[in-house]
Image 1 (cartoon, rainbow, N blue to C red):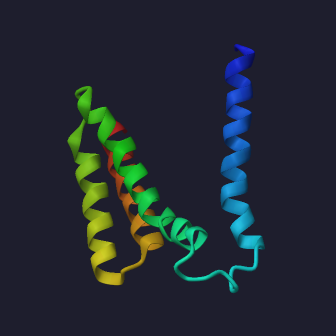
Image 2: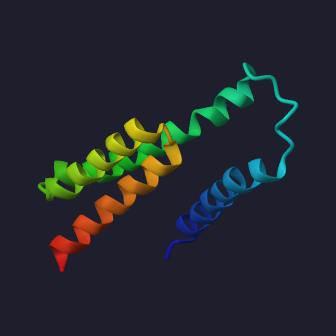
Image 3: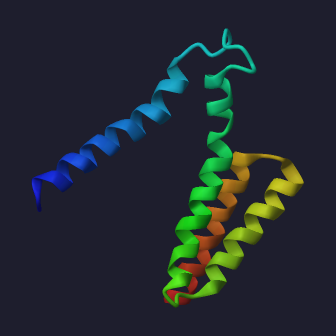
Length: 106
């Protein structure tokens, strides 16, 4: 493996870890609701859903199976419409996509 790829993976991994770990350790109660950091942190849930959607849609562009994408998207929309929970919708979409993909490949 080339050292540039390894270094890039380590940097991306470190920032991903920090992005997920540090907000759980910081005192967010004093942040203004309309401040840039509050808006950034509020946008991470919808960004996660968009990322999962794009990652599952890309294989379709190269002739993949549309059924896992449809199941995952349907689960996200249904759970979000019922509960308004970004976390629940993201988890349900991931689980539905994975289950259908596993079922079709088994």
